[in-house]
Image (cartoon, rainbow, N blue to C red):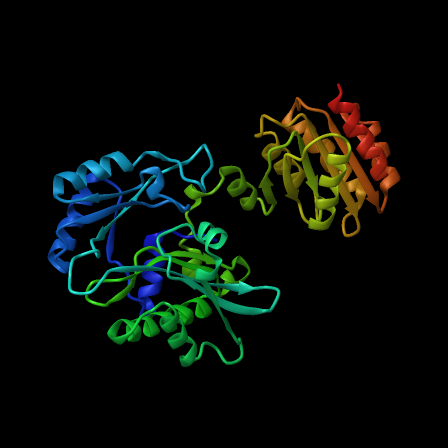
Length: 397
């Protein structure tokens, strides 16, 4: 689960991580009030107006703007709120901006040089250890840094039994070229950051940039936090931070019906019980000359209601030219699934695309007879080969 920058910063602050302070706003008027509050509390004459969407590269799309006075704050907020923000991570369709973060200016002049770094914490699944990845090249796309200057990216493995050790945090600060007060600040920053990551069951922390200010403070200017959804049952307060406006509405609808759905770009809709069988079904579609339009796992107890919900979700995609239902009757009997398909078809009404139903397992023969005798625009199959041939047939018209 992803969350917004302003939410991520609040979590980090709770663990003692210093962040660029900011105030959420949903209107230009609230943005001006936020700027006034930042001036009062932090003596920040200039502010940064930052679009809040679940995507990186916001600055490149015009979603991060500096404002030098209250008139500019209002204008920047007016421009950004409601815009369809396109970044390298949103795709061509972009994302609509519903709210902004008005943040303090932390790039103020002083005696020391301002520097930007990159720091992330994530799991190395191959080694079964968390790693801290960091670089002196903050503020840039880390993928570009890795491609062009890989020697500028460092990694520190953390033993899950021992946790992050003091010498490791000091090593990171040293590799970033810091000394004196800034070195001590970075050690505190890394230690607090890792504690936050480990405590909240995150799957990713990405702070880009981490800033060394002109007075040697170390703080997070941006913050990306992803949660491990399998652990959210332990963190109901964090689960409540979910913003469904940032998610695909069809996937949100599927989740409400306890269906696992991911939209793809193809022309054949899939409805399957079990993730492994779903992957095999997508292979079948490719072999048949089609392209899967989605991944849809209805679980092990498919019935008329789940089948109906699956139909409704798949048919929202105008690119779908056929639907392949592939169910293995282990927990559930195939004839019950077949009857569920028939009931759902009759309840929805005329479905404008052909449907192939492949049922295998308990009472598969009885299920095929139910489908064949239903009089509906449904093709039945038992073998995978038969299902693939039927997909080829309907795609060719």
